[in-house]
Length: 80
Image (cartoon, rainbow, N blue to C red; front, side):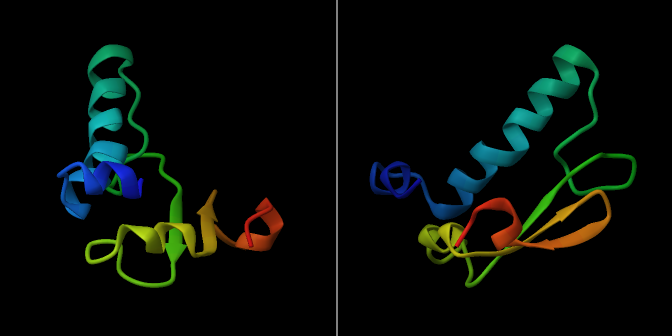
């Protein structure tokens, strides 16, 4: 992740490339509405410590995940 930012992508561009672009591809090619946080979509969320728009490395500091409408601590998924 950090490598992509060091090549010139902004943290915002990296996050969009990793999240929105794959969702748009899946919807256009397979008709699947997943991965976007919006009404009618099936999406998981990752709660991180810090602001990834200012420091993309904060995406490594996962506190919890939102899966199937429930918060799960990161430890339950092998993330420390």
